[in-house]
Amino acid sequence: MKRESRQIWIVIGVFLLWAVQLGCMSVERRQRLAVIFFDDPPISKVKVGVDGDDSEGEDPVLQLIYKSSHGPYMQKKCDICHESENYSLSLASRLRLPKDLICTQCHDPEMMFKGAYRHGPANAGHCFKCHSPHRSKLPRLLLASGYDLCGRCHTEATVKGMDQHRAENGDDCYSCHNPHAADNPKLLR
Image: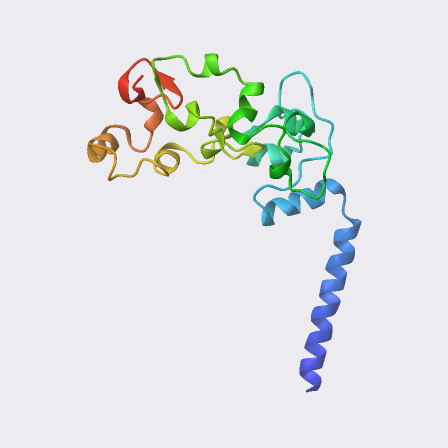
């Protein structure tokens, strides 16, 4: 009985020491620790550059983890996409416009959709099916890459000649297909 009690006090003591240490850490150290436990930790408190380089001023550790970040998110201009009123709702519920219209307020659809054939989800404004709205470990805010992304909708059963596709290009769908629009059927480049 005494041994179990002693072990409990040791665990409590270690936890309290850890909590005190955490409380004394700088914001930057806490963020680095958060990266270990969370996929999308809070953004750095370091001042962000406004010259178009979205990652300038971000914590160097976070720069190594995330390959792309949305400019307004990094510049803490949340009100471009989100309403600042009604804090009882989640940020996703406080979008200024419906999800299918929000991206085209800044991103010109005429530039993204050049071509006679358009990718259905992209054309319908379902950008979040492929892109993260804030940051990603992949370029262009992608949620996944290659077939890991495209295969969410285009399963092997629905793609003709999948074996031939993979034999020639591996899982790199973008080497032959444009993800937004193209002048050729099946969005071929």
